Image (tube, rainbow, N blue to C red; front, top):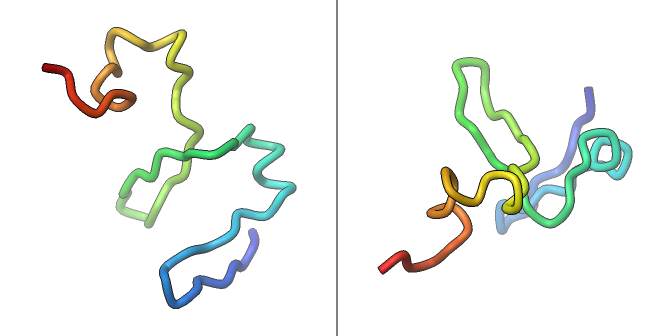
Length: 61
């Protein structure tokens, strides 16, 4: 368990140790759960392009 500070702009830094353990790069998925927030690395675009296209493109039309 780690405690992190949230800035006035709502930004928080994920500790390096946790970023490395969970392979977090420049983006994360933030999922609302009953217990709070869950942060997960997003799926690889190469692996999931068809089913998750909307997550990685701005305009599908």
